[in-house]
Length: 190
Image 1 (cartoon, rainbow, N blue to C red):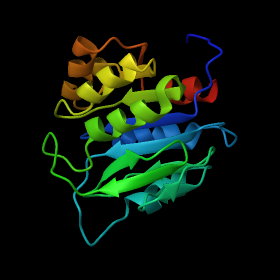
Image 2 (image 1 turned 45 degrees about the vertical axis):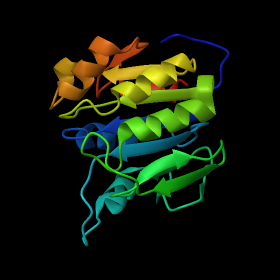
Image 3 (image 1 turned 180 degrees about the vertical axis):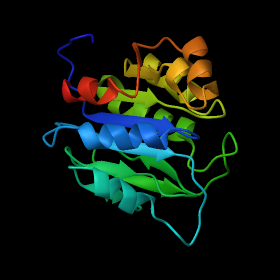
């Protein structure tokens, strides 16, 4: 991993089909004392039965919160994008929810959240794109790179659904390819 003096304040993770097992493995193995916040944006349908926040809480040693409008961002916390809302970053302290049109057939859209985080956190941002079936996240990663943020992409060979990370690896100047097994270790070293 590249070592630098730039402090990562936010890690934003995007994914779709096949990303949940990677996220669960990561949460089980993260140190309890991480010095940054994590925002997870995965494609999911709105439904009356919303068990994902509970599932993530059960495996995580770090508090997990489903984002509400004007949620405050604190280090050593994990935030989950709610179904049917885009997540935007007002500044380095506040997240907002937005119900504008779907992008890449998705709400929440990884591109929208990545782009908003990139504009706010700039070089203090690490974006990670995991398994998925469309190209959501690619444009947001390009913006993050322009803002000097860091880009990690799941190695498409390790992804349950390789299309999303494969598109990103082809179109984005990324910093690292990661695997589900080495992701927690790399995050713990930040």
